[in-house]
Length: 251
Image (cartoon, rainbow, N blue to C red; front, top):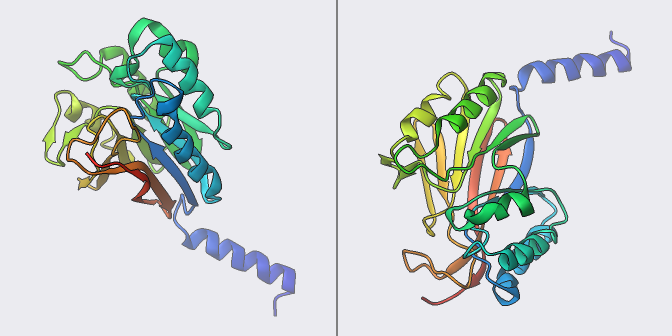
């Protein structure tokens, strides 16, 4: 008969064997297209951050581009001050409204980077042109290196501003080449903004999501009055999502 401590060790070992790699459980938020112009337009973003801060499940937030509206320095100053209200880590990417004069780099830092959380790897990719290829060769090489340095069994999430697949059907030029890089790896999701609409599509086992905007300066292309963010849950190597409304604004 096992001694109690040896019994616990055996049980723990069996559980470790039974559970898949990445049997984690964590939540995060993703916000897109805030289009901040000034303090007044930052108010809805502050409301979103307050909701995120108040949700104890959320461990970090992603900001999927078009943080500013016209890429001016005053907008970047207000945007940086606004996002610094986040109580927990936050990770931005650049949108097409954030590209002028190197201001994004000045206020938010690197254009391409990655981080790991709970056994998952998140790739934060700048998807701003050239339009004929979606991203340039330098960024393709960065992706190749990031993927090559990652264990094939590690769940991965690609985050950028522009969608790779429109409507879950039509891949943008350059998107097939990007997605092909993950062929022997465990890409779980591609999270984007840009289109100002809520979309969820699973293509070849990969979840593709688009966010509605979280702005008062811009609307959603489908007339949806909801402004807010997406809440994501990663558990046992799978990812799911729901939209969280911060405000409704009639179009």
